[in-house]
Length: 258
Image (cartoon, rainbow, N blue to C red; front, side):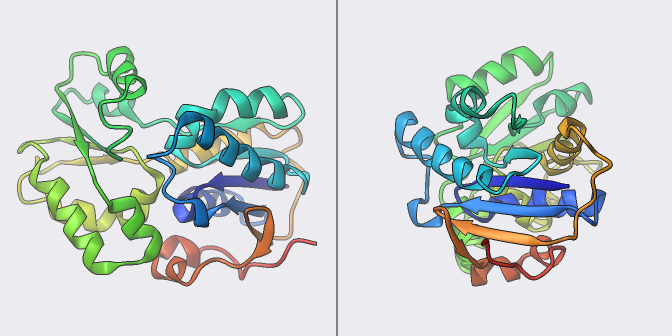
């Protein structure tokens, strides 16, 4: 079995690690375009073009499913990706876990990029799935870029800034950017002093990984646990910053596409 994941950068590591945990034999294709980061400030048309480029490069390696492991790309490009690739290649998008967070009934905070925060897309999710929960949107300027480049000081500062704007007593925190899942422990520690003692985190990686495996036409087909990395369609290796995160250590050493 081969599953492809696409993102602007290393945010796809969380879902890739979740897939490898569920299916240790799965072959992974990690397709990104880090030179074009960040995608958030770009126009929807630019984001769609970049996402299609990453997806086409991954699709050329004939995976069984494609995970759009990027909230921004899922917002702006998912329809275009599905229109081009399905039904031959199942495409799985990433959506913030607002619904399961709201079901708990307590105050909910959604950490997301500045562009996603307050967007019609996210407001629509809150309207449709937030129920009666008190939902606060928390923009996290610079956090995704800091995670992408492994800038420890910038990560600390961005998390502290967002934590200071997260309401006291928050009982559920939704990570609305895949990059944030790579530093979830640091986010949890930063909000622990003011959040509810039973604070629950909601990422997307595990749910997306499970959905990808459900969409595979032949789940009995085995793989050999390879990891292929593409940057803008060119064979590459994971960037040095990836080694800073536990999720990358769940993957075998990357191999080059042929």
